Image 1 (cartoon, rainbow, N blue to C red):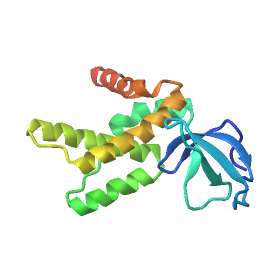
Image 2 (cartoon, one colour):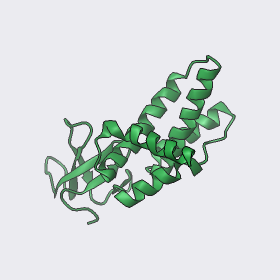
Image 3 (cartoon, rainbow, N blue to C red):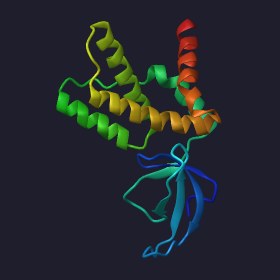
Image 4 (cartoon, rainbow, N blue to C red):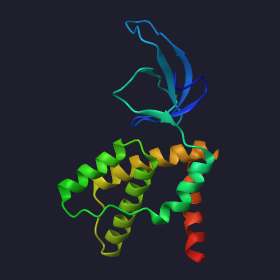
Amino acid sequence: MKFQKNDYVMYGNVGVCKVQEICTPGNGIDNLCYVLHPVFSQNSTIYAPVENAKVSIRRVISKDEATELIDKIKEVKPFDITNRREKELEYKKALKSGEHVEWARLVKTLYNKKKENASYRQTFSETDRTLLCSAEKLLNGELSIALQMPFEMVGDYIASKLRLVNES
């Protein structure tokens, strides 16, 4: 078994979950499962088979890894795709990747696009808004747990760290 009771894990596109227990739940489920509770949506329970190849599950990054990621966000290259269909596919692929660096890349790309659209008085598409919201939820959720910081403060914390880098 990779995880223990009370571990924090990233489960697919659900985000941060806490392993409540490891058991065979019955009710037609005969496999050993992790009983997961999503941290940022309290009223659900997920039974994830311990031997699950369909949905990615991994440990939440460490505090050091989170700090390193934030320090390197400036260096993360945004997506540079002009074809609308390809762009949408790559954005969705990044979102589903389960990788915090890809989420940071997606957030950076969409923030840049949102800022550019605003400067030209163009609207930010609903698709892009939804993707940005999903990527931020996943990234900020993981950083919140890793940095032991309230979820609501993560965005401002990243912005302040980036301002300090710009001023250096």
